[in-house]
Image 1 (cartoon, rainbow, N blue to C red):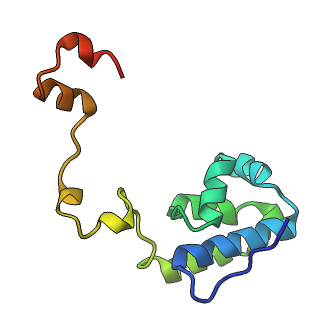
Image 2: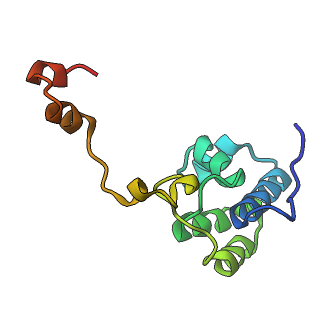
Amino acid sequence: MVSRDFDPDGTPLGLFGAELRFYRAQAGLTKTELGARVYLSADLISAIENGKRAPTQEVTDALDAVPELDTRGALRRLREHLKDRLKYQATPGWTAGCRHSRMPRTPTWQLRARHGSSPADLLTP
């Protein structure tokens, strides 16, 4: 497996993920093994390591508590330093400037009902 080091031009999420990956690799744990210790899926561990998901305070505390990682609170301290830059986005970042990104989402079945579909059509995907 190719090691991915921290890119200094990367994001705060990327920095946190790189640190988590470093501690996990040093401990010799797979994503699945680490996920099992903190009750998360390997996919979520991967998303955090790849900078695609922001770790919550609870997840960070759970990761710091894994004895094999031996972080000595480093992830908690890093998250504290980065907390203003770790954003929890419900929509992709590229939609930030779009007017529709701030509108409430309408379920598909309501859209079909508004455009003249019959009730039977609502049952089909």
